[in-house]
Length: 81
Ligand SMILES: [Zn+2]
Image 1: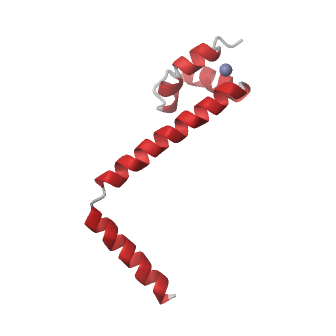
Image 2: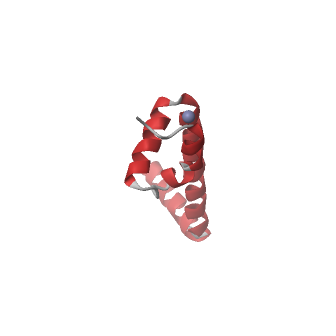
């Protein structure tokens, strides 16, 4: 018997995605998300949002010059073949 309902699942969603819940709660929230379509869609949206934030953060720490060099290398490589 699971003690996680939609409200509890959504309350813990952020910590669940960051894997900061207790192992017991991780399992309970995951089981609810797998069973509940509404929470599943919400969890997927939140997860994509977190990934997007991480991607953007790593892109901003990548210096523009280095990025240009990598692009030039890739372009030269593509022309070789
Ligand atoms: Zn739900």
